[in-house]
Length: 167
Image (cartoon, rainbow, N blue to C red; front, side, top):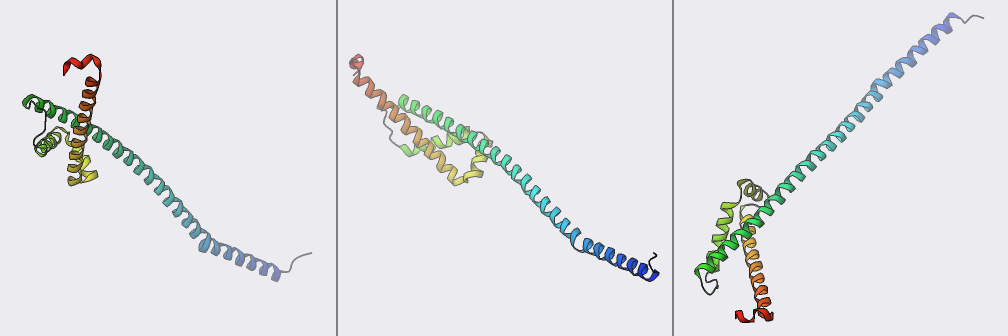
């Protein structure tokens, strides 16, 4: 049994139309949707890489800031100790007569002794004015700590029977 030529031609035309429709759908919907998915994947990967870069930068900034704060703390401790020793040397009663002058001198010495990188990091993180306040508060804290330590040592000396002859 042979298929008539008209039906074969119709089937061939119908097959071409179906193939044409499928190709049209692929080009009209599947390829753009695939491109959309590819763009979304690219954006996601880019955001993930940017987050990694930011994390590394944040860790580096945090580490630099911690180092700078530690350096500030140590420098403030040293400067306040030096000023206290100088005060003891030239002032027999050990009382501070003009605390503001000593405080400003300590702040100046700390600024001069801190490395420029530490000063730069602190200024960037806190701003110039806040950084100055931070230094001043560190000086006050260290002076208060040393005063408490002196008082504690003085109390121990006075309270201990071995040291009664010191007074």
